[in-house]
Image (cartoon, rainbow, N blue to C red; front, side, top):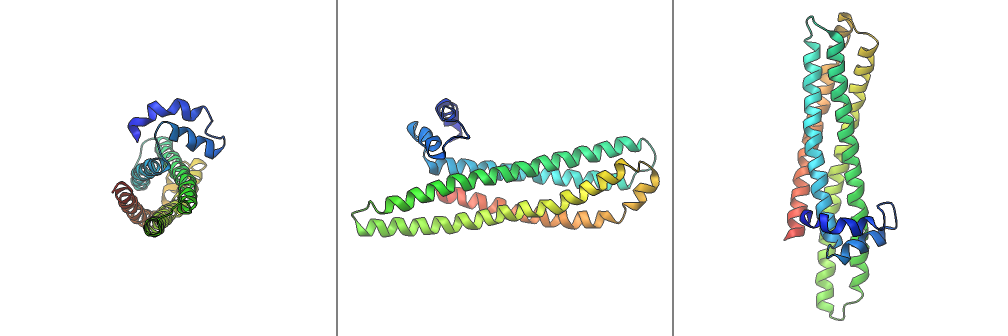
Length: 215
């Protein structure tokens, strides 16, 4: 679908991203892009955003670990480096949430349309096959979104801990402050490890869903 975006964007934007969703999807359909394709594209975007978040949170952990090894130099620079990592991680987390919300929006529209069109069948066998496919797709979709939302939840403890430490350092830029934070490393490492595990699960679920929709 990505290659179709430049062609369809003008028409899609003509109804406004914040306008009626049905009109928005109808605009895409006029240029040959169905809800199914939009869903797959948004799942790919969410998967990519999780991979970006994985890198940002890992980098933030490394920065925090390095800070605790601080041995002379400009402590304010060390604080600013950690704060930058925190802000980048927060931005990545917000992007993940935004991507998941967009997935749910188009999925709801797709499944509603699919359900409605089942009543248009005159062939009972084809209707049963389509109904079964709809049920299977919904199950796989729900499993994938649950995994994504778990990632979303797992990011919050890490962000909260990072924020606490960043705020503490902001007002305590001295060597004793570093010592006070030593006990925080284990907590962050545990939370990041759990987060990365959830991310890998969600990314695998996304890839499986994409393959299923393409196949």
